[in-house]
Length: 178
Figure 1 (cartoon, rainbow, N blue to C red):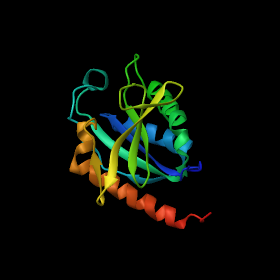
Figure 2 (tube, rainbow, N blue to C red; figure 1 turned 60 degrees about the vertical axis):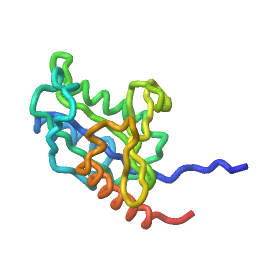
Figure 3 (cartoon, rainbow, N blue to C red; figure 1 turned 135 degrees about the horizontal axis):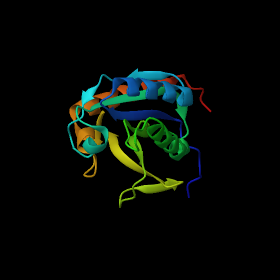
């Protein structure tokens, strides 16, 4: 029989989709206020994998990824999703979002995303929030599952997560061993 133990701290990673650079900048400032300094920020990537967000967010969307220096407990993911949902509402105009914020965390073995939608492969966390293992790490790279969103399957995104994982791995080496 195994003994329960606490998981290692994880790296907060947030994906953002918008066509408004000012809203992105304001949102990023709020995220820093909540979660601390950023240690990785991607260049904007055209988001043209689906038209799901088009009606609400408009055309010409870009995806950004950011990660944060401070490592967190994985149990914080539901609270973080509640905060990011409030930020989406804060920057909404006429009940339409101007930005989509997708929080998740990365550890050495996987990328987990938070969502408000239940499905067969998602686990309930708390307060109406579910978690999904979107990518797993094997043979020196992240890999996708059948349910992984199409954009998260791309080499471009996988490269981003591999780079963030390297930052995380260096952080773990600096932590005191218990």
